[in-house]
Length: 278
Image 1 (cartoon, one colour):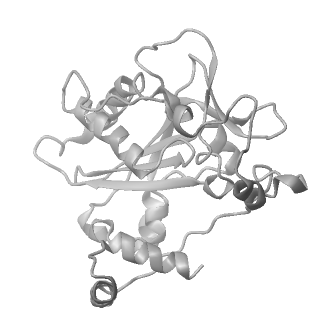
Image 2 (cartoon, rainbow, N blue to C red):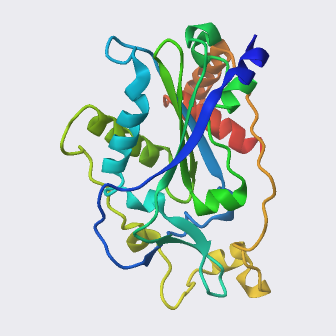
């Protein structure tokens, strides 16, 4: 059933959404922190959010207008998401974010001829249909447009919002704050709750000129061996889904509590287990 439905996606169009206004007039670059330039994090994180139909959204002719309008109003606050990632002209080859006044975020708009209920509200993350609901840019496109969105409207009036965001721009919490701001403006508020601040370089940014004081860091990065951690190609990234039963997680967290006397969240317990199994 899903295989047939993947062929029913139609009216797929892409529009570049620009900020409603800009707070700057000159081209400039924004530095990233040391954590942001970790080559292991040079990948695109893909999100998918599903929204069921309500009495106000069942007639979905204005879905695209509402989302694109609120996105345009949000971008002046989050304008770095419309920037372009590039390697700076420096021997260290670090990433930096280049910002100009004519940049926007690509928003793909498409519709399908079936309901969210018919695909079990997308409860199966391994379904090939789910892959079609989220942008999947090639590495070069992911650098040019480090944030891409896709709006898919279902026959029932529900819709999904897929996103592909380069991890160097923001993590899961930062992405959530961005989408919360889009949702607030879509509901008609005039001011977002959380105003973002780009000051990451003040905490973990590169010094000018660069200076490494810790022998441990020098040994870890092999700096004395003329090794640059930012130039290596990590190769293609593959996504896999592993289904873990709730009872297995409960037993594991109970065992951790018996050993340490501390309670751990599912994310902490499972994340630590995967990390040790690398």
